[in-house]
Image (cartoon, rainbow, N blue to C red; front, side, top):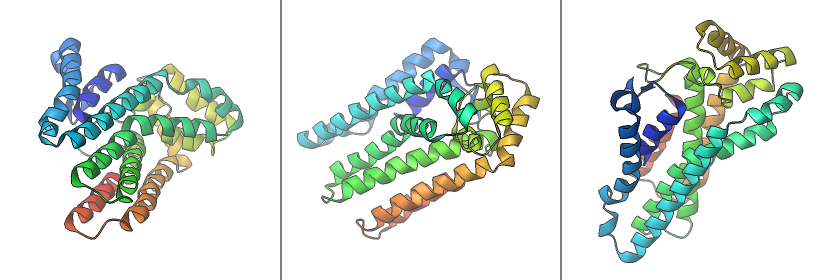
Length: 262
């Protein structure tokens, strides 16, 4: 599911680098990439062995799986549409609550929902107690949202091993978490400048660097990373009360820490 979404997402975003190498569509062409990316969606349940579960559990898993596929495509549609239509008011007023809620919704549909649904699937398979599925789904959803926030921040700070292009989101004109975080702290002239650069969709490294410098000047990137950690901490407090201590529980916590500290 995740690999397929990355292949398709890279085509739609016209990305160049994924996981330290050329994106699939650049290596093999758009047609093959589209076919293989969408095939991953249909292969996932079979490769996971869902067909070996009892009928009742199979049905619940498939219901959840198609729910998350619909949600993911809705989120991607909203992401493609973008948030530019909300930016003029943000630039004029510096008020970001509305656009921030819209961005969180997009990433909950695209990323958080997938992680949360996988946690609920695990509860179906394992026969969880009554209170565990909601807590686990909430934890997975918040991990997914935190991952996206960190991803947006690292896009402007750089990934270890050059796994993606630094400043790619600015080049593509995307309104991301760090941009929104900065809009409430910068003066109107700076807000206008940043939105102007985003609208250019420029590959000029100097202009991209200037935007990153302005975001850093008000601590926007660090603020995003702190928010991601807070999401995970709050969700963990709820989960900790309903899951007994175990090695898998430690692994879940360590995984979340890795995502927010990478």
